[in-house]
Amino acid sequence: MKVNGDVESLDVEPWVSLLDALRDRLDLTGPKKGCDQGACGACTVLADGMRINACLALAVQYDGSEITTIEGVAHPLQEAFVRHDGFQCGYCTSGQICSAIGMLAEHASGMPSVVADSSELTEAEVRERMSGNLCRCGAYNGIVDAIMDVAGKDAR
Image (cartoon, rainbow, N blue to C red):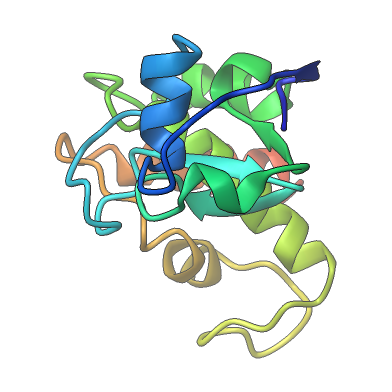
């Protein structure tokens, strides 16, 4: 697989999660092991440009894929998170940013959401689309403001 632009050849057992392969075999500690059940989003990475929970994905499923972790991201969202105080402890931040990048791409491609009533990205839609990424510190307002800023929308 290609990880953050580098071709990586891994020999892993079929039951090894993508998260464990990234963290334990490639020393990429940006994706976090939060719940290890796909409920928190701390492990979110981009697989061929789409956001996934790496804890639920088997590494062998992504043979030949392009994986991007926060270590491989250079995106305006990173600066916007700082500017809008979109993080506190930082544990969820890498997953939040990777998820937001994927979410913005989904919206741009026309992928529907539960609350979308137009092609306009709204705060409610951002909240719904990002609902799979939890922040125990409660930095949600800053996260939404950062995403809306990068999307070119007025935040509150």
